[in-house]
Amino acid sequence: MSSIIILPRIMQIGAGASDAIVAVLASLNCQRPLIITDKMMVQLGYAAKIQNTLSAADISADVFDDTVPEPTVASIQAGVEKVRSGSYDSIIALGGGSPIDSAKAIGILGKFGGEMRDYKVPRICNEMGLPIIAIPTTAGTGSEVTRFTIITDEKTDEKMLCAGVGFMPIAALVDYSLTLSLPPRTTADTGIDALTHAMEAYVSKKANAYSDSQALAAMRLIAPNLRGAYHDGSNKTAREAMMLGSTLAGIAFSNASVALVHGMSRPIGAAFHVPHGLSNAMLLPSVTEFSIPHAQQRYADCARAMGVASELDDNETANKNLLAELRALNDELQVPTLAQFGADKQQFMALLPTMAKQALASGSPANNPIEPSDSQIMAIYRSLW
Image 1 (cartoon, rainbow, N blue to C red):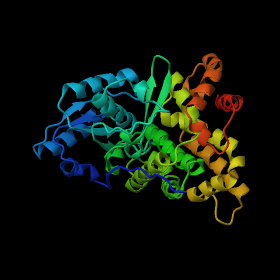
Image 2 (spheres, rainbow, N blue to C red):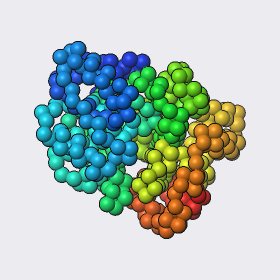
Image 3 (cartoon, helix red, strand yellow):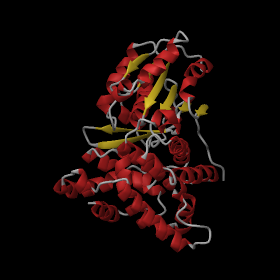
Image 4 (tube, rainbow, N blue to C red):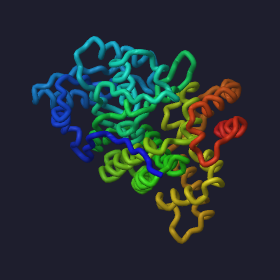
């Protein structure tokens, strides 16, 4: 059986990759880009750096910096209006997953109109919006190489998954030097997010030979380097490995889909405003423990790729080591419980049936080695408290 593999048309990877923006725009015959980013990227000077590089080539670029963490329907609307009122021929998406996800949505709605809900799964959006050049500044979401975006409907607290070739950036400039300023908390949350992408892609029912190769390579890069990047943000070796690992993990899950962790993560984020990577980190040990009996070989492969088991270890030993490592990683990276995060327990328990239904409706749990029932999802949620 064959598999469809979807990638950006152009990828440039390594220190200074973001400096290639002029050449990339020229190759796309684009002259009027809009930079979509957030206020932190402006404060750090990253947006100005891109503008200056473009200006030296006589290319003028406006900046839209009103994106927000965990983008919502309302937060992208101003960007849609900005695109519609200008004569932009392309978008430069600069930042972490939220600005890049926002740019994907703005690129589609700005060109075709409608509402974000019109594009949510099960609809597959293969229409091509404004071409997007993604420049990630975190090693986590992999959004620069995925055909997905997630936008929250704040009226219903639903995190809407939108998918299709139309959401795939046309180019990705993966420059690890842009991650050197990331604080430890963001490094931890995005790093575990990337590890989750790689693991879920590998155990997904939609996994294929290509996605497997990317997922295993990602785990080999991420697992030995996440702690180093967390404890010393200036560690270029660790940062470079994390950035490449994140991109490979993004390629893996974009072509194999995520599974139960992500399905359960979205409702937590929507209802309690837990950052996406952090909610994934909260869930990863419990969901892995639930799923291991149904994919023992696959999870043991993950343990070996991560370096916590050897080829001589049997699957049972490898999987025991894997669970121990995931829990130890959360402890060392200070991943809080929901109680420690400050979620309201009464509200959380009351929302369990709704969150379970939303998780299943996302479609991601169907890719898990074992698709859980509502009651099993609620039991996993309770274990997080």
